[in-house]
Length: 169
Image (cartoon, rainbow, N blue to C red; front, side, top):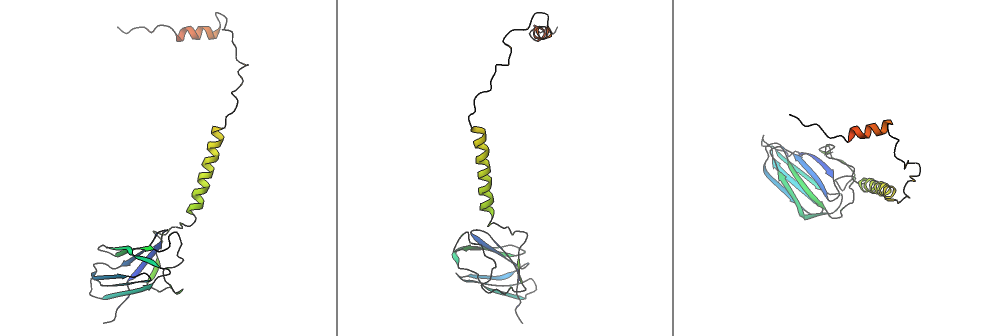
């Protein structure tokens, strides 16, 4: 019986590369993770043996990596040796195997995140600078300092406002 490749999805993050081997109801799962490659094998629900071997684009920290198995897949969290370095592909070779795809549901262009974040911080700092700039107090020389004459509209309003409230029975 010939071996087949498991359909594999991957995505990149600043510290980790994530791979998901899509195999439902897998048995006899083996994940061998080395600093330059991963070897994955298992059997699917039909008893077909699946095997994938991937030479990584760059060195990884195999000791600080792990895998997790669910009913539908096996996910590997592979720690990059050099953090914050984007991987343009998962494999060392520039040839993409047909069974390997980018996981676009989880993909994110994180390289530009620092620039966007820095721009937001600078914008916020500018706003704070504008708000905290001490300006001279507004001139109040246009305000009347004389009280309104008796019988004017403003005096009747002021007496209505300050009248004693009536008590409820």
